Length: 290
Length: 267
Picture 1: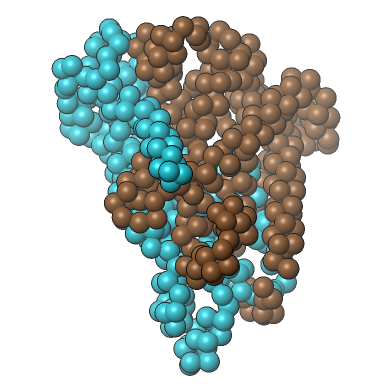
Picture 2: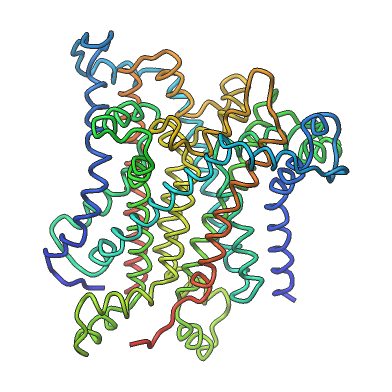
C-alpha cells in the first residue's frame, strides 16, 4: 500500500514518543554508564572502558546459558506459533461458544508470573499435584528437580500452557478482521480449505502474526520468574537461562559493572534477532502481495 | 466429519488448558493442612476461609485495588496515545517512520534486572515513588509500543479508500477518525486494551520496585505467602484465582468486539 508523504504525521506520534522516551532514555544511559565503570561505592568509581564487555563475552558459563536460551526460545516458537494458528482456525466464529473459548483462553495469561511458577510446583508434585500424580500413576518416573530432561519438559509444558493463548488470541482477532467478501470470492472460485488458508488467511494474518512472533521471542528470551520459581535454574545448571544468570551476577554478587555490560549485550542479541525476524516477515509479505 | 474432529480437538485443548486452573481452584477451597495431607480430585470438605481472609484483611485486598487502579490508568493512556500514532504509521510516510516504529518495540527488549535501579532513581527524582501514576507510566514503556504495533496491524487492514471517500464526502479529520475509523477497528482496540491490561497486571518487577505500601501491587502481596514457615498454598491459590477475575471480566466485555470483526460499507 502506497502511503501518503506527510511529515506532519510526526504530530500524531509525538505523545507516544514523549511518554516512551521518558522511561526509556535515562535508564538506558545510566546502564551504559554503569557498564564502563568499576563502582566501589557512592562517589567512588573508576572508568574501565570495555573491560567488563571483554570479561562478559569471554565468560564460558554465559555461552552455555546463551545456547540454552536459544534452544528454549527456538522450541517455544516452533511449538506455539503453529499450535496457536491451528487453535485459532478451529475456534467458533460467533455465539456463546466463541465467548466461552475466549475467556478460557485468557485465563493463564492473567496470572502473575511468579504465581504461575508456584502453581506449577504443586501441580507437578507426585504426591499432591494432578500432573505429577497422573504421570507417575502411568508408570513414568518423573521428577523435575532431579533430571534435566524432566525439568525442560516441565518448563516447556508450562510455557506452552501459559503463552499459546496469546498467539491464539492475536491470530483469532486477525482472522475476524478478514472481510466476508474474501471468503465469498474464494467460494465462487472453488478454492480448497488449504488454498483459503494459504492465500487469504495467512497473508491477512501477517501483521498480527509478526507481533505474536516477536512478542513470544522477546518474552521467552527474557523469561525469568517462572523457571526461577519452578526449578531455580537447576538441576545443576540445566535450566539456568540468561536472565537467571544475569540476576545471579547483578543481585547475588552485586557486580553492577559486569551485570550492566551483560544486560546491554543481552539487549543487543534480542534486538538483532527481532530485527532479522521483522525484516524477513516484511519481505515475505510484500512478495505475496504482488 | 472433519469439522467434528476439529471441534473435539479444540475441546481437548481447552480442557488441558483449564486443568492447572482447576487445580488452583481445588486448592483454594481447601485448608493448607488438607492440601499437604493427601491427594484429592476435588475438595471433599470445601471451605471459603482462604477467600474470607483475603476479603477481610486490608493488606490483602488493597493489593487488588492498587493493581486495578494503575492497570486501568495504564490501559487508558496506552490506547489513547497509541491510536493517533498507529494511524500515522499505517497511513503516512515521514522522516524516520520505520526507525521510530522499530525503536518503540526495542523498549520491550531490555532485561529488567539491572534497569530497576535507574528506574527507581528516575522516579524518585520526580517524587513519584509509591504512587499509582508511577507504575502506570513505567508500564507505558512496554504497553505503548505494543499498542502501537497491534493497532497499526489492524489499521493497515482497513483499505485506504475508506479514508479517501470520507474526506471527499467532507468529513473533517477528527470527525472521520472518531465516527468512521475507530468503529472500523474496534476489534483491534478491544484486543489492544486487553493486552495492555494483561501485561500491566502480571508485571511484577517494575511495580514492586516503584512502590512500597500505598500502591503495592497484588503480585507483590502474594509473594508474602512464601515465608520461613513454608507456603500457605490454600491462601496463595485463592489469591491466584482472584487475580484472574478482573482480566476475565475485561475479556468478557471486549469479546464481542473481538468476534464481530470487520463491518465493511459503513461509509
